[in-house]
Image (cartoon, rainbow, N blue to C red; front, side, top):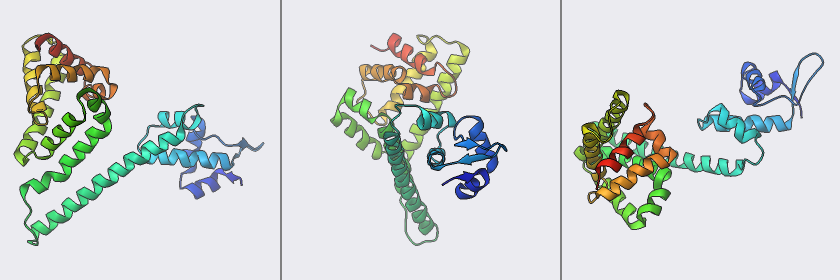
Length: 252
């Protein structure tokens, strides 16, 4: 079946203007253009547009979508399965958040008594799952299943005050790294030592028996793994390298 741009817009809910833009950047091009200049789309283009909309709904940038849709050799099925797994994780997170909101409403209206620890359970669990999704395989390969599970249990048991302190400390580290890099501080200097101390305290919330060697290994991974590097460098490039160099220079 073939569609004009107006018909495809009505079918998909995508405006004709957006379809013309997708054509101009080569994302979804029409099957043909008539002598009068009208775009005509076929089944293949309908399927492409569906893929684009699914990827857009998942928050993917258009550049990545174009690669998935058009580049030969890209395993689109694996990409979809990966995105589905991330959606399943997000669904669980939303379900837990809804449960927490419902419990909070009941607590506020006098229906139930909600312990302070319950107010933070969904957020801690969400952070655990995100860390496992992003870094679980690498951490298990480096430190072993038992060590990672012990860290997860320790983190899940954090009190409300400890959780808040950990979150504040994490932000202090990120801000401190950004300021140190901007100021051109030396990683082996006093600021590097201070930030390493904060980092050790932060690690202690999940790894109370963290050693200097463990901390140094983690700092090395922050540079080697682009996902860790992106997290630390999201405001100022070079933060992950600064922490790694400080650890290499100052830790035993």
